Image (tube, rainbow, N blue to C red):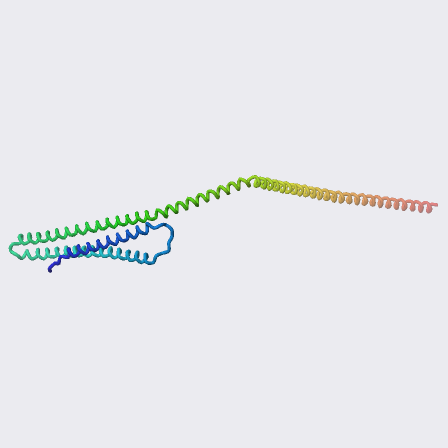
Length: 278
């Protein structure tokens, strides 16, 4: 199958893509520098500028995509040529074994295969170099963009630092004023604390005294209860003793009455006996 050498077309397309990408990068850098040169004061958004930036970003992305697509197409072509070269060599090697001068035929097939492989290898190296250069260029562009962005943000950073410093100084002044006010109010706070402590001490003293009085009253109530109980016991004992004495007196009186009655009976019997004897 005849091969068509697409290398010049691919190189031309890749060159055009790189030129377009470089041009778009320059335009972006110019636009960024124009923006960075502006004052940091906020301004109304310009719709035309936004549209231009979007178009430039789209153009840059399109160029990058086209360049990557060209690299992919060239790599596919090289892979395909490698496969075709290996296939042609295998076919020729098979055919050589059917010829009379086998070694001569094989040497020719190998030479043709090595030359095609060397050509593909050269183009592969060239493609790899271009891709590495493109990646290096992209890294450099990204570094340049970041540097430009950093430099563009410098006024804002300075403004932020100044604002932060001002806020810090204001905070420090507020803290100093608050400290001075606290120091000025320290004697009054100390007097208030002293009065509060004295009030608490007086309250605690009254509380302790009330507790002591309560304990003393409880003890007195206990003692009164004990004395009352003792008096009750003594009264009961006295009543028992009185009752015992009364019972003893009644018993003695009853014994006397019985004895008197017996004596009266004896006297009556004696009188009777005397009368009978007369």
